[in-house]
Length: 330
Image (cartoon, rainbow, N blue to C red; front, top):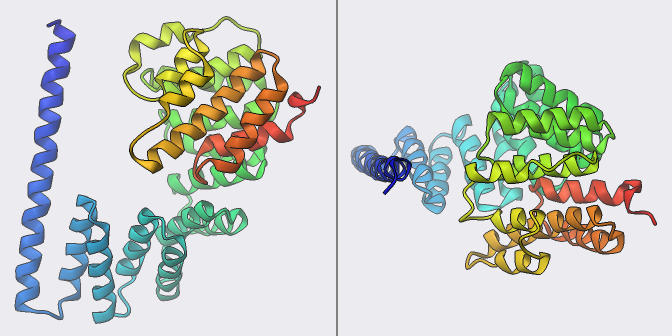
């Protein structure tokens, strides 16, 4: 075993132990809250806190039940309504999430976090104008709210409003200069706005900040190819985990595989995971075909991505941007 492999093995064991510790910690917390509830069945805070522990464990149904009981016992429990919305949103029940956030906002119209979370829910629903309105309010209440700027940037990008998207990404970078995701996000906004030099600079910075990020490497490759610059993808591969997705897409761009192979590799026992990977295979496959001059095939794959990708996926919005751009015209 190499020294690097030995370090990785020790890290994996330590991470596993940390996860076990957290699970035991949440289990003990749940037991404590159950004891509190048995002594005082009308203790709304105990239900709320037990809901937090259940949600941390990934047990969303029990979390929802506890948050729901908390607001029954205390109808003015703003945080419980907000967390109830978060749990519903995590389950994909967007309408109930929004209804819960509505209740929280009615109780506390100055709660920036709830506006941000409701903005996320509206964006997941595809109601971009309502999402932007909520992010606006969150930022008005808390001008340094980094996540609200990120959410609003994503909503603007989905609308095809690349200049304000880039401006919000710039604000995120001002607040957090090492935020690799913000550089990637601004790079995409600049790319589709036609500002290739700025896009290249952003993707390079994103890869520099997070050299293990396979998606940052893919976007830098796309920008390099559009600018007729040499590929940097092979140099990035040693730092990327090529045993997992999106490694098949990277192999496609390296000329080591085919689109059909990448699409086949997107299959997964979990339907949600498979849907996301098929989405990405179609989008990045479209980018690859576009670089090969196969515009009809690229357009077909972009249409699939724009229609079938999960609402929250960047690739969905990027595919839509490609379809609206002039690059696919004969």
